[in-house]
Length: 91
Image 1 (tube, rainbow, N blue to C red):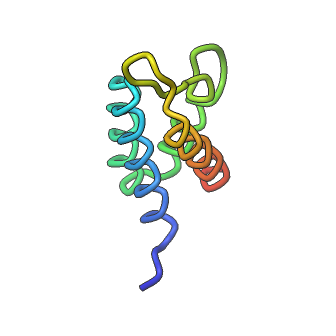
Image 2: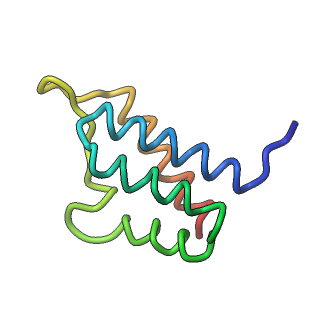
Image 3: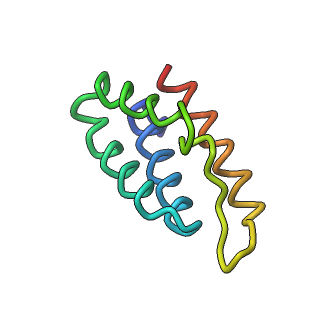
């Protein structure tokens, strides 16, 4: 069964939230989960809200996942891919 765009966006947002939580960014995780839930109801406003996370200092682009003082290389690679995928899907 092929997933529609909404399902793909929500799935990617949820995965991003999991990675952010595991990498020490609980607040970011909560914000992304909230947007994932809102996306199905109001994709236009949610799309804009999510894209706003990409600009400025301390933005989603600046986050580096870590645990116990160690950078999580594999998880950061996946996070980078999710950031790119979601930016493209929501543009």
